[in-house]
Image 1: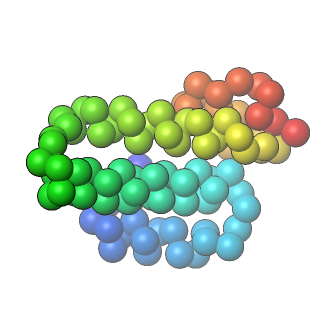
Image 2: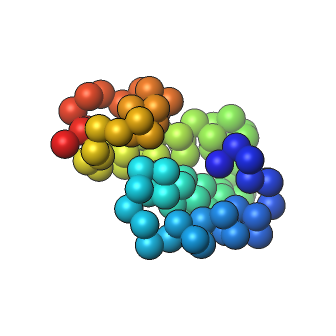
Length: 97
């Protein structure tokens, strides 16, 4: 998703054609967007209702950890994309079928 812009519209436009596919790239893209939206929403609620703030780095770290844990529960085919994403997310070989 490096070629996608940073606006929500461009991210959604990129993911819509991939929405029903079960390719490694589309599954990880959907997990990343869902986790990011959740943690932004969660931070907004914490700031509004509790008055607490976390740093941007803390939110990023929390989001990345959550994504990695979700990916650990998935099973992927051992393909070029699968191996690439396993290296990028520091996932063990056990995630492959």
